[in-house]
Length: 247
Ligand SMILES: *[C@@H]1O[C@H](CO)[C@@H](O)[C@H](O)[C@H]1NC(C)=O
Ligand SMILES: *[C@@H]1O[C@H](CO)[C@@H](O)[C@H](O)[C@H]1NC(C)=O
Ligand SMILES: *[C@@H]1O[C@H](CO)[C@@H](O)[C@H](O)[C@H]1NC(C)=O
Ligand SMILES: *[C@@H]1O[C@H](CO)[C@@H](O)[C@H](O)[C@H]1NC(C)=O
Ligand SMILES: *[C@@H]1O[C@H](CO)[C@@H](O)[C@H](O)[C@H]1NC(C)=O
Image (tube, rainbow, N blue to C red; front, side):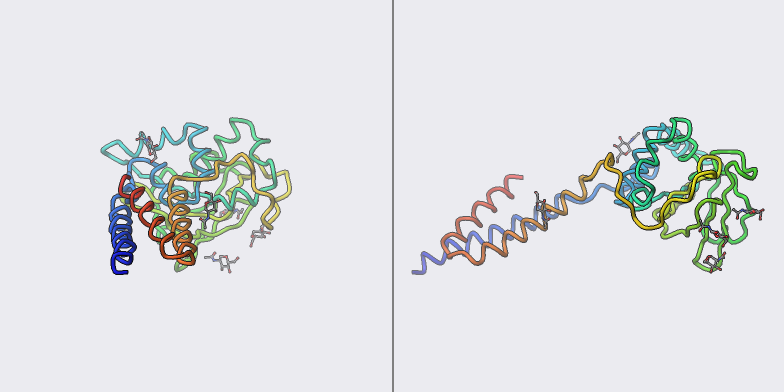
């Protein structure tokens, strides 16, 4: 009888030891502060914006800027979340020419580092990397008081939702709407505020997300296994232990 209990007990111990070390050897990679993709990946919800930064090669340009020893005036980036992109009218991005996509991305980047307090004294309209701030072109207005930072493009009004990252050369702020410039979107009606169908051409899973899913799934599996007879439990725990230990 005792012998029969010993095996399940040992495999339980083995299982928990192994899962513990498994969790320890899989830390999230640190943010590379000279790499805009790495900074945005940390936020976990900027896959569409990252894709646009890469497609327009603005990512390379930003990384060059971030890796120069003297950061000059720094950078401020308004990063629209994936939800911001999926609440655009379906197909909005696909109707843009390459040049317009580039301008849209550049419109989210200020060629100076601005802290949230500096927004309070910003002189509008702000100049973005898209250039011309004349009425109807690429003006971006920011007003702030306290922690509230309002942004208007003349097409959309939104607020800074969150500071994703900031250091002495770059500040990245999350916005929950895509900043649509007048030059490109001024003549068309503003996008529907209600979340529309998400654009389907967006890459869905990030490595981070899938690690999380695997964890949820295996803990779910453990709960289910407890319902099985003891012998079965022991066998499956040993199997799990062996799999995890081999990783
Ligand atoms: C920037 O980071 C991303 C993801 O973390 C990585 O795939 C890419 O190779 C990095 N780029 C450079 C220039 O190091
Ligand atoms: C920001 O917008 C909100 C809502 O429109 C408004 O109540 C608030 O006064 C604005 N704040 C600033 C600093 O512009
Ligand atoms: C932005 O600010 C400028 C200067 O205050 C103003 O003339 C312009 O109308 C503003 N634009 C929008 C869309 O609020
Ligand atoms: C943005 O805010 C301005 C001033 O509060 C308002 O006149 C305008 O209608 C708003 N635009 C949108 C698209 O909500
Ligand atoms: C478990 O994994 C499957 C596919 O591997 C996935 O579809 C599902 O969402 C996961 N469930 C949880 C709770 O993570």
